[in-house]
Amino acid sequence: MRIATYNVEWFNNLFDDDGRLLEDNSWSGRHDVKRGAQLGALGIVFTALDADAVMVIEAPDDNRHRSTVPALENFAHKYGLRARKALLGFRNDTQQEIALLYNPDVLTAEHDPQGAQTGKSGSPDAPRFDGVFRRDVDVDDAPELIRFSKPPLEVRLTSLETGAKLRLIGVHVKSKAPHGARNENEVMRIAIENRRKQMAQCIWLRQRVDAHLKAGEKLIVLGDFNDGPGLDEYERLFGRSGVEVVLGEDGNIRLHDPHAHMALSRRIGARPVTARFWLNSEKRYLQALLDYIMLSPDLCAEGPHWRIWHPLDDPLCYKMPELREALLTASDHFPVSVDLDL
Image (cartoon, rainbow, N blue to C red):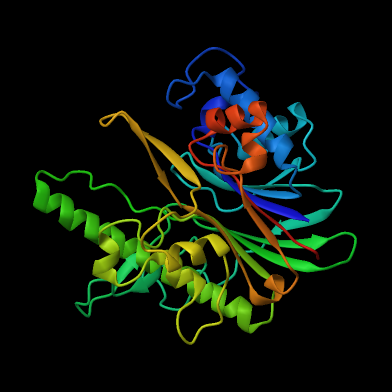
């Protein structure tokens, strides 16, 4: 079974309010890419990926006027994907939903949120992801109220062939830009404050991970963390990255992602890459490791195989010109997959 995560930049821009694909020559939102070209490229990438389940990060928006599920299912039908049924959890207000595309011939999937619902006062003990987490993030003995702008998607998967059950938590954790800052000191203050909130979200997520691992459940945490070992200067301030918190620290049962492990063990030198951003001010690309698939120990015992579908670093992708160009056109992130024997 292949499970993947894929952050699709400006996916929302490729559909009208009825979920129909906009295969035209208007700009998509991607740098120098038209909507029709991006859709065609995405069709090639999803077809090559051929996953049984794909956690789609930045999926089309869900609101009073448009819906994520029909948009994704129309996309899957257009390109004949096996993963053709869509599942949405808690929708958000950012136009970037977290959704799952899966193969209904192989799996059943249901949104299965854990944790207690909270009021405005929140809870310090792993509340439901659409609730409020109470955590003192600035060490002033006054807990802050933490919310997810994009609540993680909790999915219970069941294999139709074997009956094996598997839990997925789809994640898009993001530290907000320092909007409203008037000078460099304010930029730093707001950036640190937002980073503290992001770290609290990762602690909240790790609390949920602990509960599943203690219950002996097979678990995959996957998605875009916008964070990782050695990513920026704020890691020194906090002592570790949010990715390290979710993977597990001393005394925890640990999740495993080989790309995160490689980055943690190589402070200097080459490391894996899952995203490639155009820096207009510098007229060059910046590459980073942002997307992960973290597995519980019992799944690691089954001999899983991870892959980053990087068009320039993965030899098979590079040797296929159509796929290589499609990966570069489709998004500023590249898919990450894992093959499992369930």
